[in-house]
Length: 236
Image: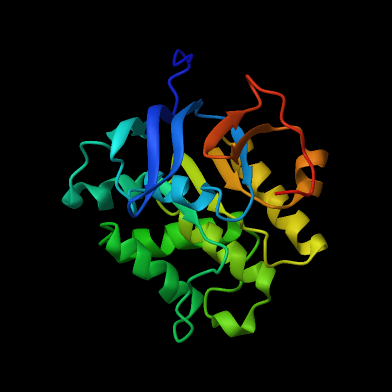
């Protein structure tokens, strides 16, 4: 494995567990600071478990892994919030508070990650909402936004701390094709500005249309298109 490009993620000889079950074995890969990488595989193949391990929601029990400078095998519970300040995490199901405005949803994350100056918080919130083309939505409630707009809020929230990498778990899975394409292009814009992207997806049209590197969870292994021939089909 070539680590010469100062990767934001590097994993060596890792075993990914869900409870007591080993979902993926002998996992080896690295992601450079400006890469866009797809993560694919059938439901239950280990995609979400791998992502959860990377943001320390699941323990790394075997092997080595480092992400944005944190050793996941040695990380302590009180260090996990600091790790997540350097990551952006985008979920499929939005996870927005329905009874709080968009501004309040974003402020909640800012306070949880150490922001205290209200003027700086307002300024940064305005920046990220503009970045995702929702500059006039701060006072709206989540139910007043479309699914695509809510996902853009989630992306804005993930960008608050200027992360080195975004981990995205099926971010277009609940969106219709046209809206999904717009959200995907937003990820491309973010990537073009120097943020690495690791995106789990079942959308084979995206994979055929955009020839990014692919990691595939299959039969307990993680295949890498850099070193393996990976067929893109509808079987995942």
